[in-house]
Length: 417
Image (cartoon, rainbow, N blue to C red; front, side):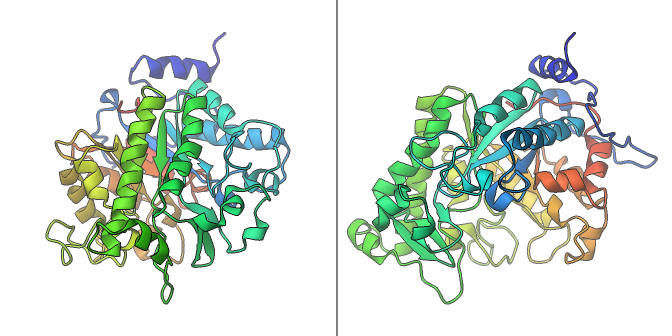
């Protein structure tokens, strides 16, 4: 007899819109006055969640669990995704220049055993791909290109770590260690390390988040003067050179993914503001403190316009009506940006803010996120949403995720491929 997970996988593979099978916890059904569901599930819609491994944010829940316990926790997250009508998980598999698979390039991640380089006794990425696909879920492998460590002491890295073998590749900044994006040998190495996973596993996508050059830290300089002197002669400014370094990383990675495994998509989830309109007439009507173009040297708009990526998932982690970065302003801006490019648009949603007492009043309302989906549904370019993150999907303290499911996810949807 086919299992519920196997049945779901078969149905989703067939591309049908079906009622969501339940494998565990119940999900509320719409009540009186529930928002109408306007997206057409049968045509495909991204419904994803991030599973963050860095610092054990989502999974594993702590270091040092047995292989069986780690696997059980991972499967619990996958089953929860199915329960809620999601169809994709974005699993962080290279959090800090390390790996959640047996990589020939980098050590095992410390977040598994508590010891960097220690074999956990199983293959988390291989298992995740197999178990996700068995449940009809896409598995997007999430990599961080340049972050080496959440500290500045190279001696704390395993002895054969590439950052110790090549100390000239590494710069300290803001209490962390980073590979220097301005070095061509670094750019090749990080691509090789990430593409090893693409060559080994039937992942559905390579996924990056918002970390390129590090977020600015007041009073500190990212000391890449030597690399700029050696490699930046063709550029009018260091800022232009830095942007070109990241452009090259994106373009080359895109090309190499396609050469490595057919059908694997490339998606990036940047911070939600490319540039403010006061900085650039093409920018959004926002006044956000971080602009990816200027502060992270990430020209996210250009990557879309040039078609270097398959999807973009801006982290629009602000509520409707916020003066400095209004969700209702940014969704239309991104919809206009992708229009006619062939690049898919998904919206990154700040589920972690829902019910957090430190957040503004809007986030105390369980319906805030559901209203986000209502607003986005008015823009046909928006192909779905991804929620941060898995532990908040599971805990759902004020029922914001349950409200999204009740209002929008009662009919199963395939992913928009």
